[in-house]
Length: 208
Image: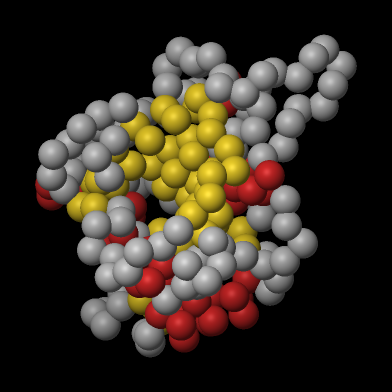
């Protein structure tokens, strides 16, 4: 994929690359890093992900000031809390992108872990996030999976998110935010061209 022009000004020669304001924190956070369609879906019908941009341009994205690629995001993650449906879809790819990062999967069904780092868990969203924070041991907790994300947002447990908007309208599928039971205010702290997508960095407003 051809790299697009950054929405932020590139640093002058000899100057350090700008860092995203959302990546700077001295405390453990609960975070979202995800791609979605322009109309807010994270997967099409039957868990179709064929519309997502293919790999091969992550290296180019490192030159876009302020943008955050998956490798950079995962460097600060100490545990991943992943919905069961998301887990089943990802394990079907045959590639495990999370390395040795501990992955907790809330489920009430038998789970055959694909890695020793995968552990089935159960409980309410507050209990689940608390368990993930304990495993993360001071690093960030990465939330993945639409239903799990909406539960955590409604419980006011999410600190910030990085959402990459893919320029496509799916019309139907599995939503990212639709289904949340409350209204939640955020503030944008950055927006960047990212491999043909727009990457939005946002924090949740306390008390919203």
